[in-house]
Amino acid sequence: MLLPLWAAAFACEPSLMSRFASPAAPPAELTVQSATAKYAGNTYVGAQVTMASRSAPAAWTRVLEHPELQDDWHPMELGTERVERIEGTDFYHRTGISVLGFTIRRQVIARVHWITTTSERMQSCWSAGEPAAFAARVAAWEQGSTWQEHGYGGWIITAEPGGGSLVDYQVWVESRGIPTPLISWGINRTLPTLLGAFEVHVAELQAGAVVSPAGAPRPR
Image (cartoon, rainbow, N blue to C red; front, top):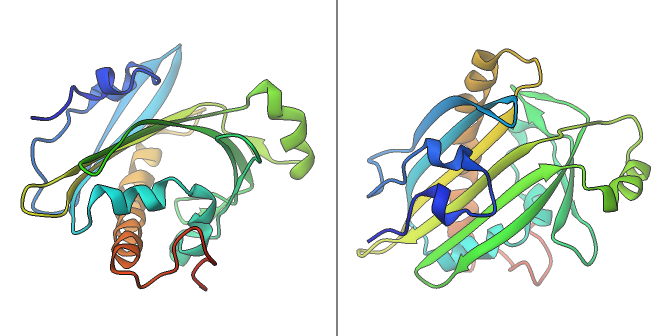
């Protein structure tokens, strides 16, 4: 039996997470749903990606607990993205994020919250923003960039009885004046490519084809 839906499982994130239901079983093929919602007076565009994975939750955890290594395998067709961990914290500095195929100069600080990490289930959530404690330090890294002030998302990876996992990913982005249909179109276009790349990389790690995060990253 699955744990409660996003709203209960992700107590560290807002009620946006309850807009999509947790799937009972992996879909026949990768599925993307999108929606819009109001939260704290702002308009958000969200998407949920669900798919079957050949890999176990533990293999997914090995990838997801090291976002700073994502630029080693991030799909080139989505643009160049750099992720740097702020030393001694669970915040990450991200720049060069691709939107609709265009790479823009933007900074995001995402705080990663780990809810459950077992051999049968992995749950995490993240929130983007500009935490005051790190604002001055990060601003010095990349002057002139704009900030994504608000964003939320998270993963639920659940082991399947016959092997592999059910992957459930959500992301919510504040529209900030960009037409919501355009954001929805971009999300639906790029997330399948990104999640497909995640699946390939996770499978490689599980098979031992790629050096683990503790060692040298895979050459691009």
